Amino acid sequence: FEAIMNEKHGKVKKMLKAIGVELKTDEKELVGKQLLKRVMQKWLPAGDTVLEMIVLHLPSPAKAQAYRVDTLYEGPLDDATATAIRTCDTSDGAPLCMYISKMVPTSDKGRFYAFGRVFSGKIATGQKVRIMGPNYQPGKKTELWVKNIQRTVIMMGRYTEQVADVPAGNTCALVGVDQYLLKSGTICTEADAHTIKTMKFSVSPVVRCAVEPKNSADLPKLVEGMKRLAKSDPMVLCYTEESGEHIIAASGELHLEICLQDLQKDFMGTEVKVSDPVVSFRETCTAKSNQTCLSKSANKHNRLFVEGDTIGAELSNAIEDGEITPQADQKVQGRIMADDYGWDVTEARKIWAFGPDGTGPNLFVDTTKGVNYLLEIKESVVGGFAWATQNGPLCEEQMRSCRFNLMDVVLHADAIHRGMGQIMPTSRRVCFSSLLTAEPGLLEPMYLCNISVPQDAMGNVYGVLTRRRGHVYSEEQRPGTPQMTLLAYLPVMESFGFTADLRSHTGGKAFPQCSFDHWEPMSGNPLEPGNKCNETLMAVRKRKGLKMEVPSLGQYLDKL
Image 1 (tube, helix red, strand yellow):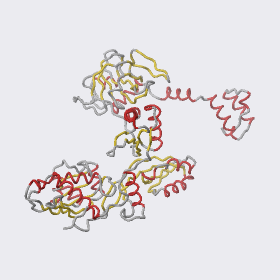
Image 2 (spheres, one colour):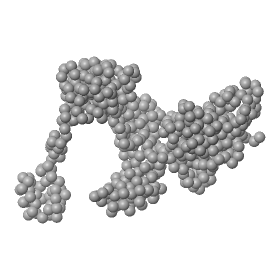
Image 3 (cartoon, rainbow, N blue to C red):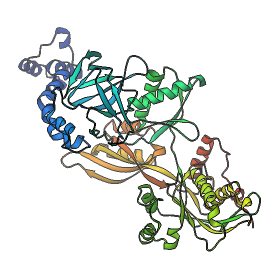
Image 4 (tube, rainbow, N blue to C red):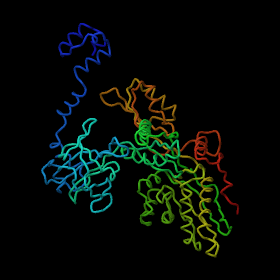
């Protein structure tokens, strides 16, 4: 290598003779990198080298499956299927087990080959099999189809070869399975067989963008195309927002670009309009309300008095992780919340609802004493609370870590005047006003960035991060290498173009990997112009087509 790069011709000739590489006349003219490339191509062609490595170093299926069955198979490790996987059994009566790992698009639009590996038994054309989805539970009927295999084919590079059957240890593709499985699944013959564990991915999809067809007549094509995209890539999430946008979520920018390319070229054949990548925010409050907020119903006969307050980040995370749930026993959970989070026991037992969706990190607590007819309006109040937490007052994003205390209620004696239609909108307005009086703020999502970079390029990484409001909180050197591993927090908003930016500043030496980590309060008061928080708020309102002014407290708060 050194000899070629420094152009020591005599030395190069000797070396080439020793390794047995013959150069043609026109190739002798090459210098430096071109020559090195040509010599390497002749001496160690990549295809042959890699194949030889695989053959020499990786264990054969018969050997490997004996020790890998424990990690692969979900069911008991002594039933018929597990035993067959362990011995890589290919005899005629052996139970079949095959894992479908991905869908490969075929030449005709919209159909997929289900590609995977046979772990035991033989898979044959026309054979009757049980197709199990990734969430299949033994004994249940969900995600289970009993069908015949239409054709089995072997994938050979770019050709597909049709065969009668494929024995264990090989990979093959099946035709006609793509209608049942979304991305991956297990195929077997035994009635008691379990599924093979699904593949776990270390990244989670956080970068989202909205797509819409250029021509509105192509909408069905787009929906169909997104279904196919979700099938062919195990990482992508495709769904529809509440606002009616079609969202594609991928693990990073590059991934998103590739997905959109595939969507337009392979799955639709028509152009789509792509919005800028979208980041979702959360609305929150940071203190206790400075007054008890009152809201009257439309007929002026009912009044709700509510105060807003904040619940700590620990409790919010505990709710999201499912440690504190709405289904739990009130008394037991009240004790836990009193001990761990400093709540009052009686209040903790009287949590009416979690929101949004009945499970989110916002609480509605009943702190009233002896009010008539209170339970009759509970449904309506909770309905209004759920509606308020789903779309908050600042920019119609979800709320997070807010707590609303019901202080007092004045109700009409006649049941007809306190129906759902009177109470629910009132409840929503009072939640809004108590959030606005409790020092509101926005939370933005933060990435945890893991950047591996050599020491000499480290300064530039710091520069790029500071420009994008990120900060490094730990750095460590990998023992025995010049590589440093930096851990940094980076706002998701700022992460678009981050990878490209980082690589261009460090000459491609830094490798970032981002995953969603936590919600971070944005600095500044969202209600006063001139800070980052307010700018973000306005940008979101503009995107959603809302009024371009921050809602004033007077819209929601009523006078006595």
